[in-house]
Image (cartoon, rainbow, N blue to C red; front, side, top):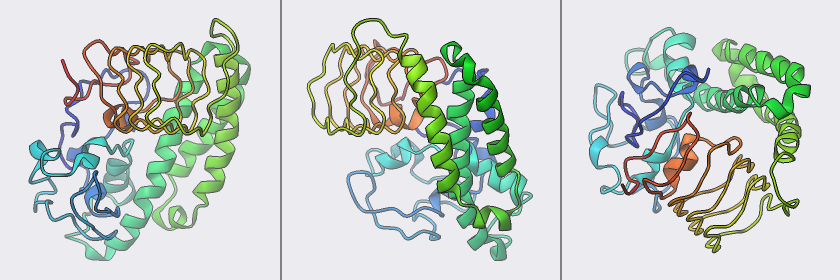
Length: 284
């Protein structure tokens, strides 16, 4: 979203080494409002083709309904997080030339943006992994992979267009899986059954002990996780849309992102990792 405030109204805690991976909408040419496809649904009130500016985008690259996105039918906009790819592409890769003033850059800029977004997401996970004590035996490999991923983000636009980001993502996923196993092994209690990629939509998991659980890629849409203990659980790619996290403990949860938190419902009693903020739409 093209505003200097996060669209969800989050109160972030920076200083964890991932500041450059947080969206700075004031330094971006509203790339998420143009480059991405929108499909009419509960998340978006309209259909929009990739490369077409959203009807709510103003001439100053800000959103005309920023404060009313949820009530106007665009809750998906309040969930999206580019991991800082917007300012990277706008300012660094394209040198501050915006797609309106320099329309010849538009197509390539919109192609490069989602590639850099994926690389920045990987950097988010790898930076977290590098600081996890139980995975100290993998720190050398994590560091090398982190440096290699950072190097990819410094490629020029033409090279980024051709980059096989899916292949790189697959390699990183294997490493993150090994990190996850080492960290989750430290969780107390009996070994938890894997729910990786599982269908837990609408599941009643209130107050469940999910410490150290493998929930990677699980479908937790509209699940009741109120009061659940998710410490040390692997949450990479888990779908939390409309999940109830009221009173849940997610401190120390692995690979959780702001977008996942924004997609869920929560309360003032929900405990989050210090790197993430509490969405404005959550209850007090």
